[in-house]
Image 1 (tube, rainbow, N blue to C red):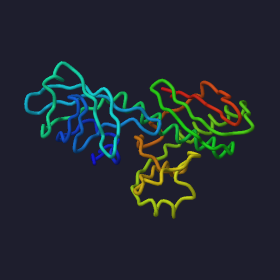
Image 2 (image 1 turned 135 degrees about the horizontal axis):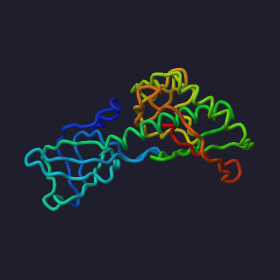
Image 3 (image 1 turned 135 degrees about the vertical axis):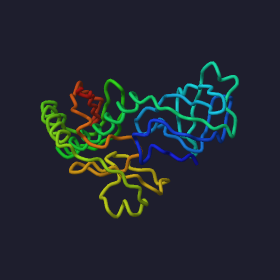
Image 4 (image 1 turned 180 degrees about the vertical axis):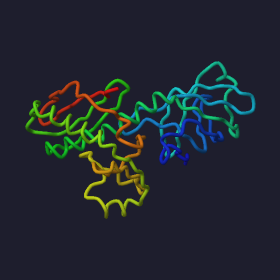
Length: 243
């Protein structure tokens, strides 16, 4: 199982690792990685791997998680003389992309928590993007006028400069301490035995495997851009970051 370096250090921009598996000359599994794999509504990181022995560079186009392995899809002019098992590499994260997603993800937790508390909604999903992100929720009465208030509440929370903390605990310990593991209505997979808790002090604490900023002040602020009625009790909200 690949060691996920991003789990406790989301600010790690580069790292060293050893190639453990290569499939079809382009899918590379490392013993450890700081690349975030696409999951939980958060897009994957991109960047590059550089082979230490000769400096050959390989672009990382996509990252996914399969049976505990984090697989990196590589491309580039060196791919035909590709990475081999045992090669030592240095990985470099596209930091601008990663950091934007970190800000978006923490902002999503804040606004989702506000909607959950203020409107009594159940969060049913989310999708992060670089330009805008969305939150899906279940809510019978859809009062669009109130979302200006929710935006203000979220921005007030962000402006308080709340620290963001991580904890890895057993599932049993998490269930003892919390009334719920996640804001998502569908809950948390029974297969998960260890849980990483993300706490935004004074706002929320819940299970999440994504990348986040250290303090809400890094988000700067959010702006709700669009509201959609997707059918009976199915609602969608889009927002962007205020830079």
